[in-house]
Image 1 (cartoon, rainbow, N blue to C red):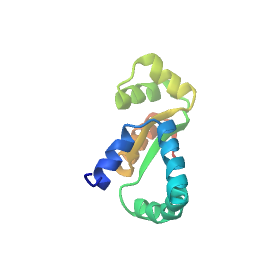
Image 2 (cartoon, rainbow, N blue to C red; image 1 turned 180 degrees about the vertical axis):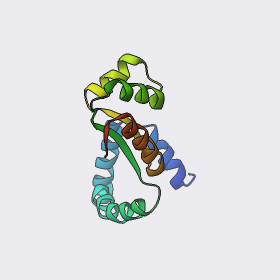
Image 3 (cartoon, one colour; image 1 turned 60 degrees about the vertical axis):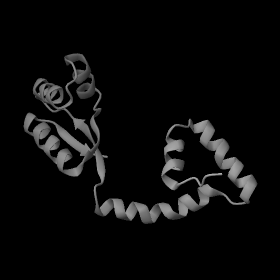
Image 4 (cartoon, helix red, strand yellow; image 1 turned 30 degrees about the horizontal axis):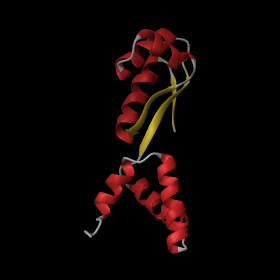
Amino acid sequence: MAKLTKESFIESLKEMSLLEIKELVDAMKEEFGVDPSAVAVAAAPAAGDAADEGNATVSVVIADAGAAKVNVIKVVREITGLGLKESKDIVDNNGTVKENVSKDEANDIKAKLEEAGATVEFK
């Protein structure tokens, strides 16, 4: 039997549904007597620290469209490539303009939106 590499195991996980992964975790608990999720939780803070230093991503969210809502809608359309209705919905509902963008790109987007009159937050 060929040895399963870490890379091929991760690729296999990417193809699984959440239910299949849960069943896999349960089977690992039963077979080896350990909870793999406990190991992942213990390692998560260390991984989080590295992410803060490196390429952390944020979501750009409109907190307030301001008085010049039409200008904000135009900028949202430009940034997202969405249509008028979708862009208007984002602005009206204080929605997320872009998700999982680098901090540099998020700052550029924030500058454009603030120039148009919006108040922007990162999440």
